[in-house]
Image 1 (cartoon, rainbow, N blue to C red):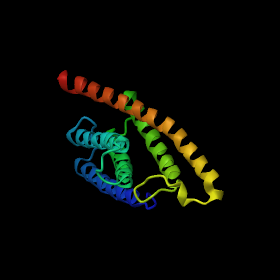
Image 2: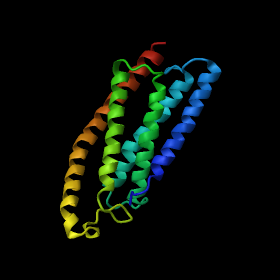
Image 3: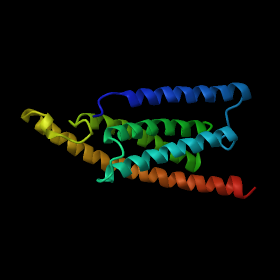
Image 4: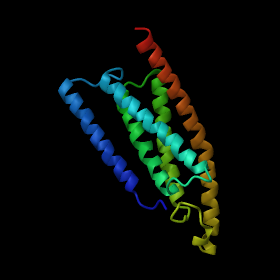
Length: 187
């Protein structure tokens, strides 16, 4: 059951630590870390890996009916945590330059993160068991209509969130291939 905000608090604290490290690099080098430099690449790669984990692991666990590798609520919290920390790291990777395909990719990242917050809000309005399974028995008859509306809204949200996520990862892979080609293979 996703009623607490511990994944949000943990994500915020992790982002504070990452920002402090970024600030330390900025302080000692006296310049914004370049996206193509060691620190910029490292934080970009780690952020992308977090985002890839966000997309794949939770989705695989959700679709696997026979798998019993943890509660769905715990996987959703992991999804939310990595879905916040990864994009924050990618934002720092940009060196505050938002042009070209990288800018479009970052825009899609911002849209998907915002959409994720909306989805989390909708999700917390649907009654669930401790394992995260919807349970209409937890609501009274007067709330049944509100539950049906929340389910429809969640379904609509999925039809927006998932395609934007696919577009994001398509743009991300094109960006990575372009960066490898132009920054690595042509040198």
